[in-house]
Length: 203
Image 1 (tube, rainbow, N blue to C red):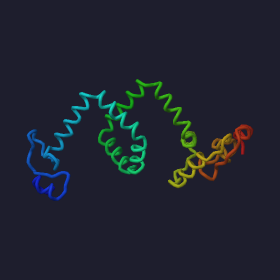
Image 2: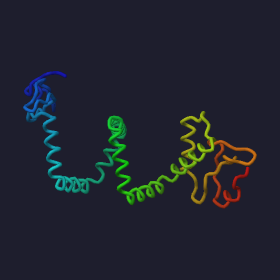
Image 3: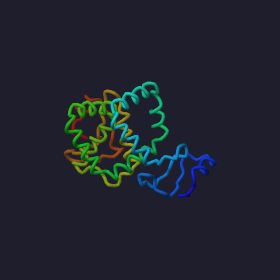
Image 4: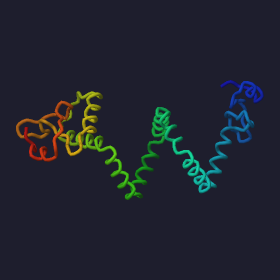
């Protein structure tokens, strides 16, 4: 980091500057060019205030979100890679903490889990059906190791595009009587529920 004084930072139009010296709380960090306050001190102060005034802070955030309904959606849309990278790094560095948090949340919120699961299955029926079929195929050892990422995308796409009233069927059944097929794109077809029921485990 380049060491400079606040006066120089203001002259250069910088928001932050680094002195290399500890602040009154022994933080060696960037400082705000606006008021010279240590960034770590400012963050700690903000967090302390938010914890002390959580209800008030939540009300302000809710009011702001209601007044700017598209801001968060647009920001997320324009920063997907940044969000994914930060989430991946955070989970990587706090995997045990996150794992315990999710386990406790699922255990203490069974009704919410049920509602969220039902909503997800309804919104992403194709993906859910594709994953279910994969698990079933894995159990029967009918998923070849040579499937590529493109093959998996084609399988997911085939399930997602399944017409209403139809089901995805394996042309050659995964567990046939005389011959068994593979869980691959070329072995998939759409059948009405009635036709699929009549076909059963035959080829």
